[in-house]
Amino acid sequence: MSKRGSGSSTRASGGKTTLDEFLAKRGLSSPISDYMDDKLRIPHGLTRRQTEKMQKEAHEAAAQYSAKREAAIAEYKAGVASGAIKEKSRVEVLMGKAKGHPDNPSTQAARRALEKRGYNWKTGRKLKKK
Image 1 (cartoon, one colour):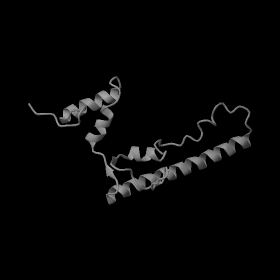
Image 2: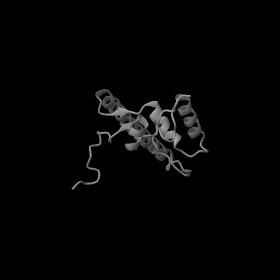
Image 3: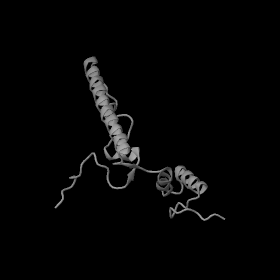
Image 4: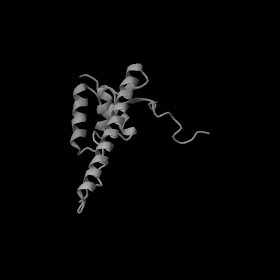
């Protein structure tokens, strides 16, 4: 009987992954921390001491987030180097993006790039040369 979340956090789930996907699984996809998002909502009436304390806490939170993110990036690079994690190829990344909403400009660009490289974005197979 397996429990939810019983897998190792350092092990990549089966298949290939990009650095962005790897970081997103760990909640580290943003390059900056969102710690202050709710605290900056019009802080009227704060004293100088309260403001300094809030800034100090924000700086500490940002430093912790940055350290976690750098550690995760190093873990990903080490996993790729050892072969435990496989990177997606450029075509595989484009395939994922090409399956988005047809009105999205990045989806359209991915479809054009795949066509240029000779791939059918719907099936993922190489197009037959004429």
